[in-house]
Image 1 (cartoon, rainbow, N blue to C red):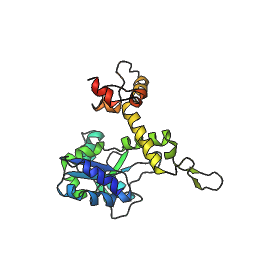
Image 2 (cartoon, rainbow, N blue to C red):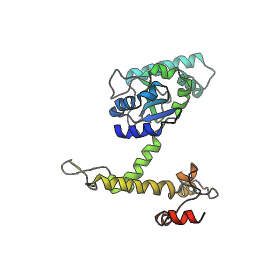
Image 3 (cartoon, one colour):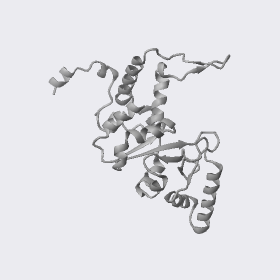
Image 4 (cartoon, rainbow, N blue to C red):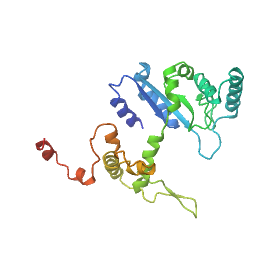
Length: 251
């Protein structure tokens, strides 16, 4: 983990400012402030942990936090009786509540998202205090759109398409965990991930997604074409048979 963050830190060496969003992992809580200490001190990196609601599960907000949130909403309803609930919640996000969530130490403080149906229930600043976060209007404007869905989607793609990265299987007889497809040599996993990265970014287009919504006019694209580092959707054969020598002389 530390080596990974070190590499990210090197990639951000010329960045004027960066927003780092992390999962709710206790290791991240100590590693991120330690590795990015210089950028945090210069206010060049803002780091947050995101607490997501469990689909179909219980609310992760603590009882005290839910009571405080309901009380604040009631006050705002009375103060802005002519406003819609949507506008009232926008105002509440402008001065959010600092609370706690289930499963975390009582001393941890989270900036609570007033939108109860949002995927992100709360965020914890790792590079500043919650009070400093609330005082920063630029960050408050960005946090409602915070998401880990892109990372989660990539992990799901890797697990489903690469057997070696599939989650362990739980035995139905004795409850033991069995790494059915796990590789014994991590080197092969690294190579498979690299192959998958190239295929996903340059060959795998969004054609099916476009057709699902009835869009047959928009040209299919890949992640690489959408950010401008490729000009076309490549076939696997084009990448496997690529020759730098031929490409150079064809220019």
